[in-house]
Image 1 (cartoon, rainbow, N blue to C red):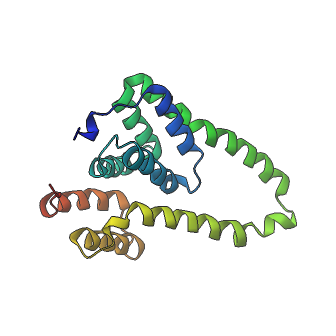
Image 2 (cartoon, rainbow, N blue to C red):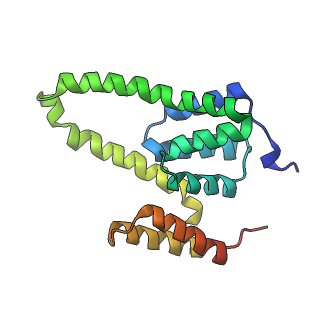
Length: 183
């Protein structure tokens, strides 16, 4: 069986994957779920553990996670040209949609329609984010060291106010010494 890491993705395919990702709802989590589906499940272009490792690295760099992923995968599969194509494809939909929503926002401010946004749009947005996060981590929802680390990080961020980036680094270090990949 060929190593999935040896598979390449063409420039046009890379552009289409990231354009589709740029159109995904749910912010970074929704985009991550779509990228996992495209690169790991559908195309088998990258093994899931490596995908999650790159995702973890993308979470700790100063840029946005999805921007870091566009750079990483674009460069991995098509070099500098792939990086540019991935970034353009990822940014284009949100750029156009942000302009359109900004225009709509300025037209709706102070109207009765604007008053109901918090009770309608926000719960739906939170649900999309939660579903994406659960799908991304569903394999870790069984008793394991990973589940303990996940719950500890959740408690650390939500109730103890710890820095998520520092928890990612600490989790990576703990995982490096305690968790062994299935071979």
